[in-house]
Every structure is written in C-alpha cells, then in structure tokens.
Amino acid sequence: MLSKLCVFGGRGFLGKNIVADFKPGRAECDLLLPLDIRAFLENHEVESVINCAAEHGSYSQMATEHTMYLQNNVLMSINLLRECHDSDIENVLLVGSISGFPENVNGVITEDEFFNGEVSVANYGYNMSKRIIPSLVKTYQLDFGRKYKMVHLGNIFGPEMIFGHEATVVGNLIYKVWEGEKQGTPVRLFGNGKDVRSLTYVKDAAWLIKEIIYRDEILEPIIISSGYEITIGELVSLIAEKMNFEGNILFSSDETAYSRKVAKSNLINSTFPSFEFTSISQGLDETIDYFLSAVKEFDGWPPLT
Image (cartoon, rainbow, N blue to C red; front, side, top):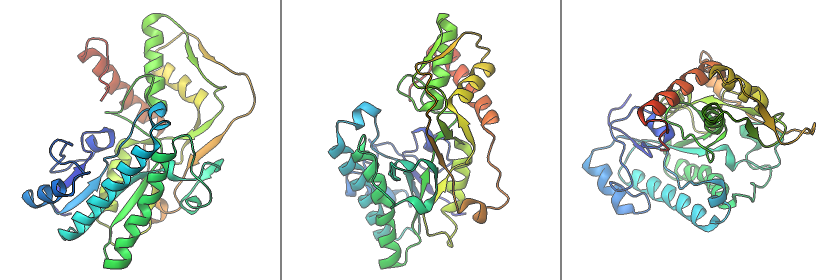
C-alpha cells in the first residue's frame, strides 16, 4: 500500500473512519478552487486520494437548492480529477451514493440498475451530481489509461455519524429512542414500520474503500452495501432493546403497503470472497456505545458533526 494517502472530506462521517496521512478541511483545501488542490497535492507530496467530500445538506435544503448542489458537487469532482491527473497521482477513488440510482427501483438495487431510469426529483440536484461522477471517472480511464475508480455507498451507520431529527435513519432512530427515554414520552415515527432497507457498518465501508483504491483490476463502479435487510419497525425495536427503552413506539399509519429498497453489489462477493460484513446488531452496539459516550461527554447533548 502506498503511503501519503489524502482523504478529502476526512472530517465528515465516513472520512473520520478512514485512516489517512492527510485530512484537510475546506479552509486548507477548497475543492471548488483548482489552485488550492494543486498546491496541497504538491506541498504534501500526496500519492493517493480518496474523496469523501460533498456538498450535502438536510432533505429540505437539498429540495430547494438543486442548482447549487449539482454544480458544486460536479465541479469538485472535475477539479479533483484534473488536478490529480496533472499531478500524476495514480490512485484516486471518488465516493458516490446510491442516491444516483433510479427512483423507480423498488426491490434490490445492483450496479446494473444505474442508468435504468431517472433519479428522484425531490433532491434532483444532489442526486444527479452522483449520477455524473461515474462518467467523469470513466473518461480518465478511456483517455489516459488511468485506473481511477469510484464506489456507490448504501446506507452506512456507525461511530462519528450525525444523530438528531435531521439525521439519516439509524442516527435519527437512536436519537429519538434516547429522547423518548429521557423525556418519558413515546417514540413517534412516520409510516407503518414495514419499509425494508439495507444497512452497512461504516468501518466495513472504510476497509473496503482502502482495498479497492489499490486494486488495479477494479475499474467498474462498485456498490458497497452489506445487503442485510431489516424493516424500520425491526430496527427501532432492536435499538430500543439495546438502549433499555421500555416506552411505546408509535407509527403514524397502519397501512399494509411498504417499500423495499435494498442495495446489494454484484461485484463485492466475487472481488472479496472471504469478506464478511459486520452484522447490524453488532454495528448497532458500537454505534450506541459511541452515542452514549458522546452524550456523557457533552453533558446530555451529542455532538452534531
């Protein structure tokens, strides 16, 4: 493995879980400014680059600023790829998201589905930016023989994630269960709890990313997802059990309809045949331990990083 690995976005959730030599913040290297990137790569003699950085916000923010999210995410990717190429950096990996996959996939999301429909218009700008990244990477493979690559992340969870009402599903549910226990109130959730999702422990994703970036034979985008399925109802019940919450969990609907959106890779098993993903239960144990330690450290309020 080469030394001097730089992770852009290294101060975010995923980036904090990837061991690297450099993790510059935006003040040190703004990916919207090509000269910033060039200077940082040269001054630190960077040999490999992983980009976890992205313009990202809450659901409501991304639903109202489509242009900004699309332009900034695409520009950051264009700038970074060009400067890495010009600096002759051989190992570059960009992190994408399953949000770039079609909205109409109701079942199992695999790599083959990527261009089989339109992205969701709800967060169109952000989602579409993740649709464009693979094509940018592919151009450097075709024109210059670069072994640049990317991965699509499924729903990841674990230490360093955000907890709160605006957080993703695991961070949201852990926070609501903790809040219900602290206030002596029921946990109230939208829907009927029957929607099915897959969850991937962040340390598994971090390990795979550091393996993939140095595998020359890997050129096609890979979904990083455990494929483990769980309903929202099962998930919140498991969290409640692990946090010793004895109150009520109330859903807003008793309808029988549900959606199943499970990300599963066609390539992970063949590429890493002996790799085993961390179980959802074990991952939750470590995530809850991290959350409760943060609550204690910050006197009852977890850090929203």
